[in-house]
Length: 246
Ligand code: ADP
Ligand code: MG
Image 1: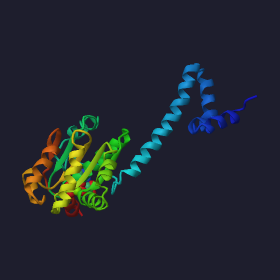
Image 2: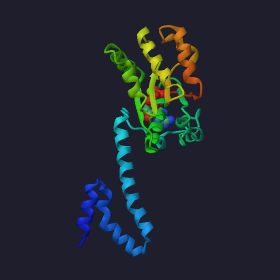
Image 3: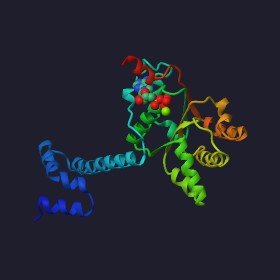
Image 4: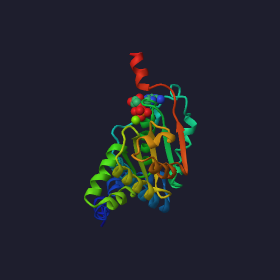
């Protein structure tokens, strides 16, 4: 004669942990609701899927390497009125990731570029996408290290496993020739295949300044801005605002 425990053990044996854990409670619920057999079958599997989904999201959050968590709900569109909540919300169906498009935030320091990029990245993870955050500097360092080990292709392929790559703060420091070449390899591999959110303090016309060679800036910019949503953020620094209010 089967008991709840013995049935639960069988579920656990097949790694259906959520069903095993909640079996007793779900049986009671099904009885109270006089649920149909089909509905009960669905309740069981939904329970398992929900747990697995939650775990996957947690794992993707850990792998995304965000330096801090910033939520879009905390973003003050009254202060930063050069971008609207509607414009940001329109990105939240993540059509831009499905269509392999890019998002670019351009503006001087402190206007909220990184905040928006992280906020969007976190929402993308909640929606099931894999996201990788990196500053431009550490990305270029990682590519350089891989290149020295003869593993540039492998590193790029690793990055291509993410649906969305956030490259933060491109343009704060100049790049050497090899760094630029490696970055071009990555951008080229991602072009029309994966999405990028890029933040930069420089307008495209000035990109030649931090790329060692203006001629290489052109094909990189070209691939990033083709199929992209570009937001120019104005206003003064939010950091300064907080300072002045204190
Ligand atoms: P940027 O990347 O453009 O230099 P950040 O996104 O790092 O600027 O913003 C600097 C700080 O100010 C962060 O702590 C960020 O959370 C905050 N911040 C910037 N803009 C806003 C805003 N409009 N609403 C709320 N916080 C903001
Ligand atoms: Mg920033």
